[in-house]
Amino acid sequence: MTAQRFIQVGTGGWGRYWSRTVIPHLLQLGIAEPVAAVDVNPANLANAREGYGIAEDRCYTDARRAFEEQPADFAIVVVPPAHHEAIIDLALAAGCHVLCEKPVADTMAASARILLKVTRAERKMAITMSHRFDQDKQTLERLVRSGAYGPINYIVGRLALNNRKFGDWGDFRHRIADPLLIEAAVHQFGIIRGLAGANARSVYANGWNPEWGEYAGDSTALAVIEMENGVRASYEGSKTNASTISPWEEEYWRVECRDGTLELDRRRLRLLRGGAKEVPAVEELSLDDGTAWLNPLLAERFVRWLDGGPAPETRIEDSIHDTALTMAAIESAHTGRVVDVPAFTQEHLDAAADELGITA
Image (tube, one colour):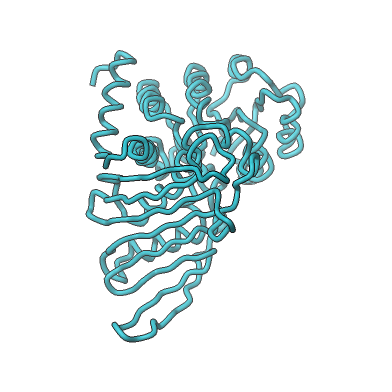
């Protein structure tokens, strides 16, 4: 395949990981070619130069100028969610496809606008940073979806860390509203959708910040979700625990199926079965093999899609449902009401279409 030219926007923070892990994976495969790197902080551009060897004269602090001066096939967007729409607008204006970090944007209104803009521009867009596509979660999803353990009764998930001090989770997350739901739960909600094999029908969430949490918004949340196929799920998320019991990439998951309990805890996968008065029989299960997981896997699938391959599961038309569930959970936490997720999603798509002058 022809190497797809790209511009990376955002090389600091999580962009450092992209520069030193994800993009080198694409270059090693020979399927992508960097033409520019952008960051508002010039010091962060060292990550791109050192990570994948982009030349000094291809480093920019002005994204608009980079898109104007360097023809590209796609953009990699690794900036805080509140800035996604502005960068995606620049990319679409330059005729680029878009590979963007999760969530689609920081609000449902912006997310809906982005989906409609991408569709109108006839460009391709996919979302990365989905923990659903890690090795352990993909193994669990495959086993659950295989039907070998019967239908699902319900799903339980937990992400719980001690990041209570200011700066423990990146300064900006301590300053924004709803940091736990918008910056963390969006990943776990994607895992729930993958395990259930369905989109959400409704969500009820309760969010808060304990007095010892150095956050401007809610750092803790509990949520109950019903999927469109009838599967129920409960979610526990906290950034202010006394200990880190379920950290990033080592979240706790339990899927209760008719014929067995599948439990994933810190990347250890077990099958439990037993009668009413029996100590459960425990079988340790191995994780699936693979050459790439997480962002390297998703970035590779995206680039191959641009060259005519199959559409990835994280294309925006699918990922919008992760974002919608997240934003509906925030709406529920703010109002104290159960939110109808499909209706919530359609309401925002209709409003975005009116705002953009798009006829359905």
